[in-house]
Structure formats: structure tokens, C-alpha cells
Image (cartoon, rainbow, N blue to C red; front, side, top):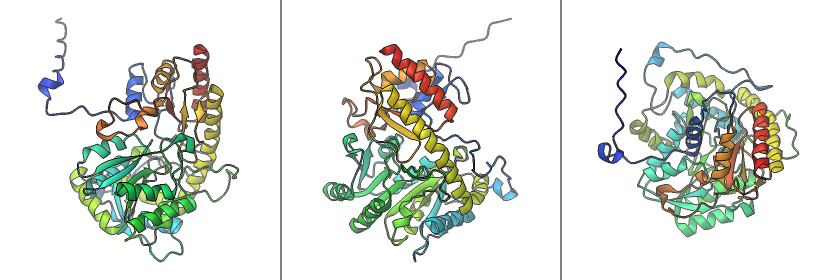
Length: 434
């Protein structure tokens, strides 16, 4: 029997595919790709994935039952409208009105909502809708913003530095100074922040919204982690969970320049559904929906129809309360465990399910993010080096060492059992280098 013919060697990129540019991987994709070279695969129980950007998706004590089946009607075989199913848009608008806008005259309607197939799709639609402006973004922030802020040539991305020495705080006075001094027409931020967990909330968030309206500077607020809120000293079993959104402080939903992004991915713990939304003034929603018509064509119709029942206020509050009980416990475990290892934490996370820590004081050989990441991989533990959150569109700061080269983002999205096992393995890594 003849031996099989080996596959042809791939042609060099510069000869066969010169029309294409190399596209960098986001932090999570990079670290899991590197881990796969050592045998990692999703669901492999030998690995502890502290790099994951998703929460555990199984049942939680006190949470509503998980949906494990989706009915597909005849009409659902067709395309969904690019702006999303009208019924889902209505349900999302009503949820925001009931949770955040009780007693306010100005209310969201279905026309204030556009549905999309994933958070990146929602953000990309918004970016494609921006004009020739200066857009401010924070450092550190979500890794996927880097390519998003570079791929569209209409706007100039202006970095705004946050300092660990200040607990990554940023006052409304700081915001006003940046808007006026740098001529910003829009500001993009994750709130709570991925990776630091810093959360602008309450009167501070209200002041940000008022300032954006006064100075005509659009706030593009990524609220995908907004149900993961932690307040020291509060009762984790409180029947009314903490929920916060810029939507609470908008004066006129059709005039205030505030655009909010959220979805089932984190706050409902259904990342695989790829159902997300944008909430904002009708005129902007029309623009982002138009952008979706050429960027992505719209999301999945069956998944959108199934999502309608998840917008029930009682369901949302019960799920959020369960998240906060479970993740508060995991947050404490991760913070205490990392500090025991010698990881310095600039600020304990007020939101998200990440801890942002510096390994600079660890022994030589694991005292920078990349070295620590590689050493952890050898123990089948994945984490994300901090340099990926040093958002650098177009690599305009090429050749400079990242301010966050000694930082790591640790996820407490996995189960508590996985977290405990990961911390034990990391303790062994540190002990070997002492």
C-alpha cells in the first residue's frame, strides 16, 4: 500500500497572500493558543484556565434554572432584522426602564435598542458609525479594543493613562480636563473595567453622564460586567442585588450622548448564545443598525427569540443575586490566594470577575508577566500577561516596554474548585523560584 502523500507546505505569506496583513490575537486567544501547544483544550479537566473571559455557565445556588433547549419556529429559519427582533428590543427597553428608570419621564423604547451577534459586533458597529473625531480610551482596558480602534480610519484614538498608585481612579474633573484639553468627541470605557475591576458608579457615574451631555462628548460604555458588583461589608445574601448602569442617570434617552453595550455573555452567563445589544438615542441606534447591515448582517433569530424570556425582571434579579453570592466568595479566595503568593494588587476589584496583580516582587525568573505566564503554563494554569491590556492601536508606541509588563490578569470565572487547584499550583511555581 502506497504511503499517503504529505500535505503541501504552506506558501510564504509574503509570496502567496501579500494582500493580507498579519492580524494579532487578543489576549485570551493568544494565551489559549499557546496553552493548546502544550495539550490544553476546552473542557480538559487537567487544566485551570484563569485566563478565561467567561463566567462558569452551570447552575448556581439560588439562580433560575439554566435554559438547555431552544425551540426553532418556521419563521426563525429566516434572517433576523439587522437591528434585532422587535419583540426582544421591546423587552430589553422595558427591562432598562423597570430597573433603572422608574419614576423618570424619559423612557427607552424598542427604537432605542439594537441587537447584535456578540459584544465585539456591537462595539464594531458603533466604531464604524463614528465620524472624524478624537476618541479617548483608557489604559489599561479590554484587549479587543486595540484592533477595534485601529481598523476604522475615521477617528483618532487618544490614550488616557490610569495610574495604579491612584487605584486606577478617574474623577469627573479628570474627565472634563481630558475632553476639553484633547478635544474629545467620544470616550470608550469598560465599566466595571476589564482588567482592573474598577467601577464608576453612583454619583460619580451620574456626574460623568452630566459632563458628557454638557460637553457634547459621547460616552460609549461597555457594561458587560455590570451585574458583577462587590461592596465590602455588604450582605452577599441581600434580596435586592446591586445593579448599576449609566442608563440610570441619562436625562433624555434621545438627546443625551450615552451609548450602552451589554448582553447575555457575562451578566446572564450565556456566552455561547452570542446575543448582545446597544442602548442609546434613536438616531444613534439607526446609525449602528445601518453599520450592521454591511458589517455582520444581524444576529441569530432563534437565539434572539429564546432570549426574550430572559429579560423578565424577576429572572434578572434572581440571576444577579446568585452571581453576586457565588462570585463574591470566589473573589475573596482569589485575592487572598494571590496575596499569599506575593502578588501585589493595586486595587481590589469592585466589579468583573478578574484580579489585576503585579508579579514584580516575585523571585527572579517569574517577576514579569510573560515569564510568569510561561511558568504557569508548565503547571497547566493559564493567565493573561498585563501587556495585552496596554491598548495600543496601530502599535504607535512600538519599541517601548509596556507599563503593564509586570502585571497579570487572573480570572475567577471558573468554579471555586478550579480556582483552589490553580492557586496550589501557582504556589508551587513560586516556591521553586525562591
